[in-house]
Image 1 (cartoon, helix red, strand yellow):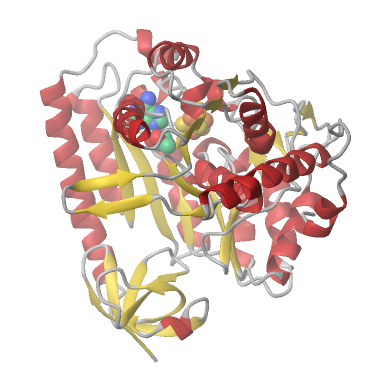
Image 2: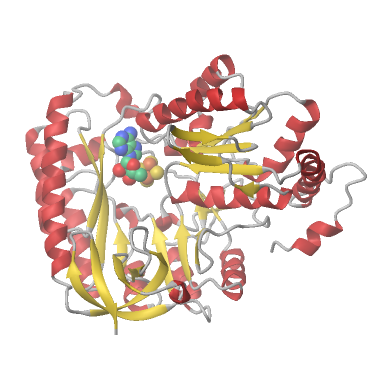
Length: 498
Ligand code: 5AD
Ligand code: SF4
């Protein structure tokens, strides 16, 4: 497990160690030496700005990278809101990119245009791009050709090497591009920086083997590989002793946890459908931990053992994110989802029978190639029958290299837009009535932060993931309190401590 004493013992007068994580400790220290000199020269600490797009996995990766930057000596800052707009003068700007939909890529190019201008005013600014979009060859070519002011480019498999790559850039004074096409090792024992002191994500597996026909994730995050349960438990125990009471177990598809282990994705001969449920039970036994969440579950292999673990483990939260994608069995087949409308609905019934108060959330794609009005009506029907607490809705985005990119019968934009609006309005109506049905009841809530809009209020989260705002101050942050829900405001509650 990460500890600063280990790092302090590393000798940086000789060559870099070959083994990890010692090698990264060496480069972090080398960079720190450089940063100390820079600090002296500028008369102020160096600043960093980290922007994260995309999912929880990226958020977790960013926590790891910002911890490395802070160890080196960078402090958060370098962004200024001014009357005539935003300006950036950070010494290090990191963009952790997403590529799941095309508009995420467009966003990055928009940011780069702005950063080019900012860097002209602050030539010592280093710009780094990493994450999923950097795993795409075409994008790398574009950056090489048209964005020469970008200093560092790396992908999803080598984020732990940030210090080594930065050191190479400092040493050579040349742009460093290092993107791997697959995982070489899983290096975990590096510093971590948490956005919240009391909750954090914990990676339990990386990659995805499902190859849903629309999805680029398996190509940019590689094959599925799980971490050993004993390593996960040890990490969570350490986090708990450092004040964490809520963990979110992270994986692209947690239900296939344990099928392959390690960076080489070695098949596990003992793999069975209960592996994730077993892990949940073990995590549930960790003393001092109060809440366990997990993300994401694929409906095709959500086991009975998992439902049983959710029903019986007291720390597992009353929330399940269960991506539907489409309610049409025909579209689901074309999406390569490996379940159909009926099996999804019976899974929901099975879960609700064991965990009656569970809040279900989902992801839905509108406008997949060939989606007819009848197909879309099936999606509306599932939304109506399930009643989700909330749903993330996406307009289908064609991703080059995925099978669906070659499918015929693209749905015209105006039709997609109309369906999207109808879907949103049904989701809103349903979730409004679900939220309203809980008013008057009392729930345990974890106070997370001071309310964004009203400093006399705090924002808390219920086990079912709903947010509640209540009167309170910063002394409550990180505490669990019983809250009565006084009023539903559609997607959140106004409550009071009881
Ligand atoms: N177009 C639109 N939405 C997509 N998603 C994944 N790939 C695409 C795509 N090509 C959505 C899915 C997934 C969520 C993370 O992003 O709904 O569950
Ligand atoms: Fe993409 Fe499907 Fe894997 Fe989710 S399960 S990351 S949608 S391929």
